[in-house]
Amino acid sequence: DNYLSSERTAFHFQPERNWMNDPNGPMFYKGYYHIFYQYNPDAAVWGNITWAHSVSKDLVHWHPLNLALVPDHWYDAEGVWSGSATVLPDGKPVILYTGSSNESVQLQNMAVPEDLSDPLLRKWVKVPQNPMLVPPPSIGYTDFRDPTTAWLESDGLWRISIGAKEGTTGLALVYKTSDFLDWTLQNKFLHKVAGTGMWECVDFYPVSLTGKTGLDTSKVQVNQLVKYVLKASLDDNKHDYYTVGVYSTDFLPDDPTKDIGLGLRYDYGKFYASKTFYDPVQERRILWGWVNESDSELDDIKKGWASVQTIPRTLVLDNHTGSNLLQWPIHELESLRGDKVVKQDILLDGGAMVKVDGASGSQLDIEVTFKYPDVHKLDVLPEQKEYVCSQGGAAERGVFGPFGLLVLAANNLVEQTAVYFYLTLRPNGKWVTTVCSDQSRSSLAKGIDRTVYGITIDKPPTDNFLSLRLIVDHSIVETFVQQGIACITSRVYPTIAIERDAHVFLFNNGNESITMQTLQVWQMSSTY
Ligand code: FRU
Image (cartoon, rainbow, N blue to C red; front, side, top):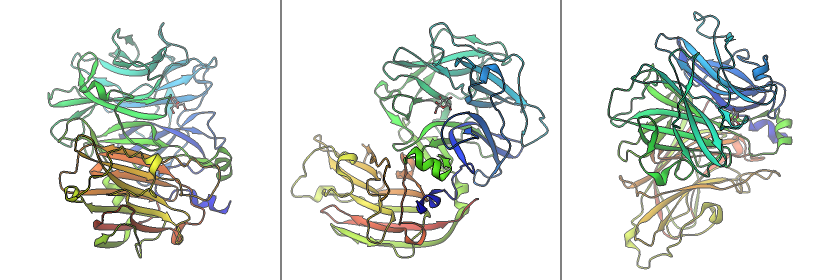
């Protein structure tokens, strides 16, 4: 079990020990970024849930503080569950969270800072009016949780949304208030989708149609050139779905075929219960997501910890399409980049496997581009079947692909994590690009979930190359496709492909050759 100690990440957010789940109440206050998170102070498994708290000047280096909220009232006796922070126009932050009561009823509560002059906001006070909200008549006692950040509307009232379900219909309730004490349930839902089950950790925010600047939910939106994003974390399948649309009294997706549960996800790997916040300093919207383990509970207990958070990602509407988001690691991450290896113009013939010298290690930031192949030069058209990552995997041989990278790979390749492209021809004559993250050979250890993740992108690239960015940090690989059109996060547990025995390879298992244009690999330093 020696390898278990090397699974700890070096620059991802994780507490020193024990269990973590959802990011809660991210915000910026008086010079510090704050993150709270669901935390079990006693064990490496879920339970005894509190809000733990850390602060940072740069979203990269974090300083742990004391627990911010613990179960110490009847209304949160079984756990201080997920919630959000709202920074009011006068600068005061407010936390809304779900308490699981002494009778397991989900109730919404509020906490405010004891001392607003403390930029670290070390002490939080639960208000005497708690619980503020109880489940409304049509909603089950355990189907009412995770209040959003409040948003301000032109009538001067604040709105929050709370996730719920009725039968198997997932939905987002809306409450309005002028003072955060008196709340009224709106009879219209924000949105609901049949068959999607319980909506956890709803998030709702405006995005600009014209620029990359983030928008502040604590300001009334006067600009007409905005869209709204609704996100729900589906308890039934543990994925975060989002949909882009318009908002007046309720939310209407632009494309009903891409509604919650049907369409787009923030991430096509392991990623859940995410939350965004507005950074007033750099005027950007930032996304945090929880990444659970793929190993066994017993391994988590042996390691003494479970779960990490993603690298925070900036999030903007893709102004070319107006229908999907683009995500990218915050630029501050680049401050950890050290030694760098660059390779250019490498022709990868069918079956090629090229080790990248000088790029070994368990802490890497990698950017690579491949020339988009000349798909029209084929004399014989390939079979027109959908490629499914989890059926083919990196070993299957196609025409264009699989081609891409191996990371955390042993010299003899008995351990390897493959991230790659595969191009297929649809019956309508259009080529589509599938991206996969293949964990099936990532570890010799037993009891690990080796699901292969993937996503198909319908649009061919506009600029004639395919690009990937991979953030590799011991037991996590975060992949960003085509400037952030899609993301795939995976957990991997190499037992021998560790540190200087963890290598990077370029490979092409397709029949046609592929040109790797530019590869840059940086060694990343640790933040702990
Ligand atoms: C999501 C979630 C939330 C809940 C919290 C409890 O992972 O189930 O709905 O508030 O975790 O820890």
